[in-house]
Image 1 (cartoon, helix red, strand yellow):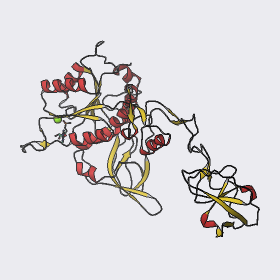
Image 2: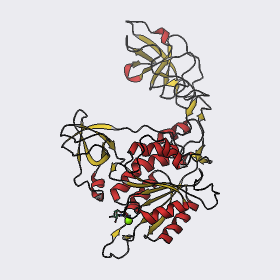
Image 3: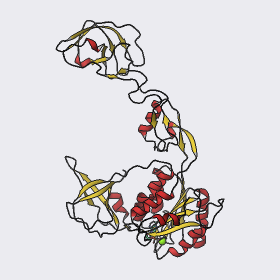
Length: 433
Ligand code: AMP
Ligand code: MG
């Protein structure tokens, strides 16, 4: 495993005073290696878990040719252009109840959606396209082609084919697919354990009496919420004051329990000294100023697990990841979404997914300096015809959490971008509802 310093050395134009957001992402992609422990879980417990092995289809889906419509099944070779076709009904094929009889020329079987196609029959005429008269149906001329409304065995998945790839994060559609293969359990990577604590002498927990100069802890709730949505087991370590011994004890405890530690606050320049000292004493951590807004200061690294042996300051792969996020509530959320979330998905073993950045027309000018990435909280509107426009949610201060609540998307103004004029297109990341 590469040390943090080695990874840093690889980054082009590395400037710890003003790292580009994409350099931080590149660094994290190098640094984070997926967990390897696998467990088998029942399908219903597998939502949002990550597949640890490819799934090879043990059967064909559908397992037999079947009807796509309620109607009449017949041998389509009898269809003649310009000529209606009259067929005698000799039986009924129901879903789950196979028709066993023989069907000859001039005959058909009444069939329901999903019923197995009787042997020799390849075409289904939907009931509503026919006229029925005593035990016969009449198919008007030129209403359908041979082979119509028949679903083929294996047209979804064939036996032996890869149904899902390793690293698939199991959405409801994937669970349905696995169930359709008759599987009851799936191999998934184990869940991540994520520990979180807020730092700052001024931070109160909700329920505590208000105190002069204090603020209530928002970040614990936003971060634990985002971790829960990612499917992590969360370890809530509360609020830790700016006391070196407390910070050290909490970090050590978190490292022994968790795969990843997330903190907020205490990493900006004014305060970083004792935080930096303790984090470096317990592990291998870099402190950065990222050229982005909100969210400039950030610490990233590893904290040694008590049981792991060390070669100098270089931690091992199994040591606990650390993300020290900035304390301002919007900065905490934005840095989590930009950096922590993709890193944790990687740690969970999930295959990287491309970020879908939409384009929207900005309703008003935005002043923006080139040389940093900015995330502005936006309200996106879709107009008739589908055109998207976006406007910011008002005060974009990094402590204004109400503007994050109002937002349904983040306007992403990339590193080199300058001022935005009204009517310009901007990048847009939709926020999950
Ligand atoms: P810091 O990053 O520690 O310099 O904090 C930056 C700002 O964010 C300060 O105004 C803090 O009071 C505020 N802050 C830090 N942590 C929290 C938190 N957990 N909840 C709400 N505000 C916070
Ligand atoms: Mg602080």
